[in-house]
Image (cartoon, rainbow, N blue to C red):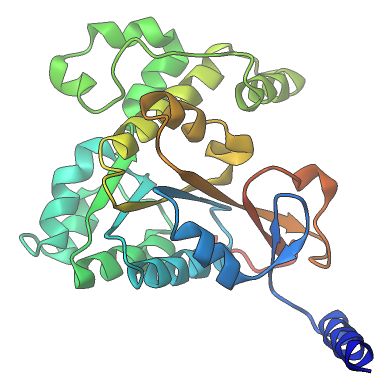
Length: 286
C-alpha cells in the first residue's frame, strides 16, 4: 500500500509539472532531471566551477547570482572570475571592489559589456559587499584581434607588459578540438573562412584558463562565468585548465534553450556535468 501511495504522489507531482509552465529545469549529463540543490551540492565539492551562460538570457543571470550566494555560504573561500572583464582592467576592478575608486569612475573607465548594469553589476556588488576577490580572466580584445588578423606568431613582437595580460607563449593549439573545428566549419559555410578565427578563440580560452589556474585550488572554490561555448563539452577553457593544473577538480554547468524543458534534447547530453534548460521563448536581456 505504501508503494502505491508513493507512486500516486509521484504521478501527481509529475502531472502538476506538466500542467505548469516552468521557466527552467536542470538535467545531469545523462539527460536525467535533477535539482538545483544537487547542482549546488556537487559544486561545493569542486575546485573550479564553470557557469556557461547564454549572454542575453535572464534566467542564466539570475542563477549566476543565486549560485554565487549559495556557494559563498559554503565552507570554502569563494573567488569569482569572468570572461566579461579583461586582464588589463584588473587594477580598476580591484580599486572599485576595495572602495579606492567610485562606481562612476569604474563604469566610465572599464570596458564594460552593454548588458553589464543588468547582468554583471549584481555580481560585482555581491563581491564588493562580501569582500570577495574577482578575477578579470579574459585577454584584452585588441590582442585577440591581433591573432585573428595575423595568427599566434604576431604576439611575439608585443611588449613584455602586453604579454603579461595573456597566457604564456607559445600557445598550445589543437585545431582538431571539436569547439575549434566546428567554428571553422561554420564560418566556411557562411563564406567567411579564416584559420585564425578559432585561434583567436583559443587565445581567449588559454588566457582565461591560465588566470583561473593562478588563483584556484588550495582549499578555495573558483566560480567562473563565461559564454557556454567556452566550456561546453569540457573543451575550450576546461581543456587548457587541465593542462595548466590537471589536479583541479572541475565542474561544468551549461545553458541551453529548447522549445520545451520537459526533457533534455539528446544533442545536449554530455555537454556539461549539469545542463540548465530554458524555454526558447524566454525574454532576452538585449
